[in-house]
Amino acid sequence: MKVLWFEVTIPQNYVQHGFHGGGWQDSLEYIIKSKSDIELGVAFETSNSSHMSKSIDGVQYFPLKPKYTFWERVQNRFTMDVSRRRLLAQALDVIAKFKPDVIHVFGSEWCYGQVVEFIDTPVVIHMQGSIPPYNNAFYPPGYSRWDEVIINLKKFKYKNVLKLPAVWNKRNSWKKQEERTLGLVKNYMGRTNWDRSIVNSYQPDALYFYCNEALRPSFINSTLYWKPTDRQKIRLITVGCSSLWKGLDTIVRTAKMLIKRDVDFEWYLVGKIANKELIEWKESVKMENIKIKILGMIGAESLIKHLCDSDIYIHTAYIDNSPNSICEAQYLGLPIIATYVGGIPSLIENQVDGSLIPANDPFSLSDEIIKLSKSNERKLIYSENSKKKAKSRHNPDNILNDLISIYNRLETN
Image (tube, one colour):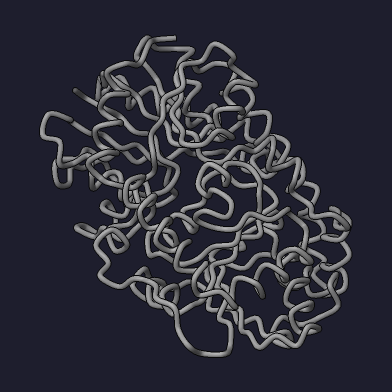
C-alpha cells in the first residue's frame, strides 16, 4: 500500500537523519516504518530553498516550496487564500508523482484535505485541534484584542500594533479555511469525543475512526517514572503556554491565591511562553515574584526528569483536544489536575486517574492543588491508573494496527 502524508511541520528525520525525538507525527512515522508493506511518502511545506525531494530510510520526502509575488506576500499577511492555492497546486503535483493508494492529512486547519475536489483517492484527516472552537475561546474572560493593542503601545512596539489587524484577519481566514475543509472531506480519524463532535457538526454523515497519537520514543522507553517525595515544598509543572487559550492567566491567578493561603510551592513552565508581558500587565504582577519559573524549551530527556521530579502536573487550557503534554505526564505516572474542556475528559476520568476542574477557576484549582498535595494515597492512585491507561492508549503496536485498519476501510468522497 502506498500512503502519502501531508504534514504541517518539517519531519525530523528529513532534517536530522536518524533522529527520533520530535513530535507525535515524527513518532508515528517511526512506528509505521516498521510495516514493510507500507510505502510511505511525506509532503510538507518549507521555505528552505535547499530542501529537495529525497528518500531516507525508505520514506520518500516531498518538500512543498510555494513561490509568491510581492503582492501575494502582502496578501498572505491577511488571508490564507493565496497560500491555499499555491499549496494545493503543489500538493496535486506530488499526488500525481507518488500515486498513493491513501492520502493521510494531519490537521483539518490546513488546506491539504481540499485535494478531494480534484482526485478520486481516499483522503482521511487526522484531527488535531480545531480553529473555530479555539477562536471561540481565544481570549480569556476579561481580555480582548484591544489589550494586545494597549500592551504593545505601552512597550513602544508600534510596528506590532500596525501588524495586529492582519493577525486578526488571518485568524478568521484560518477558521474559514478549516470550515471549508471540514465541509468537503468524508473520512476522519481522531481520539476524543470532542473532535468527533466537531466532525459531526460539519459532516453528520462522515466516517470517523478511532486512532490514538504516538508518543515520543523517549517517553515510551523511559525507565524513569514518577514517585511521591517527602519534601514540604509543592513542585508544580505545566508544559506549553503558547497561546492565550492555554490559560496562563489562570496559572498566574492560582499562584497568587496559593501565596495568599501561605502555601510553600514553586511552579515550573516548560516550552514557549506567549503573551507573558500581556498577562503580567493584566494581572498586575511579575511571574518571578509569585514563584513561577520559566524553563523555556528543553529536550525530551530533560523534560522527563523535570516531570518525574514534580509533584503535580497542571493543565489550565480554556479549550484543547488531547494535549500530548498531558499524555506524556500520564505515561510517567505524574498526578494531574486539568480543566474539564474539549477532549481532556476523554483522557482523564475525574477522581480516578486525575482531577478535572472548571476552566477559569483559580479558586477550585488552588484548593485542589492543596488537597491533592496532602494526600500521597490519592496521588498514588492517580499515578497507577494513569500509567495503566496511557501505556495501553499509546502502545505502538496498537496504534499501528489501528492505523492500518483505518487505511483499509477508507472510502472515496
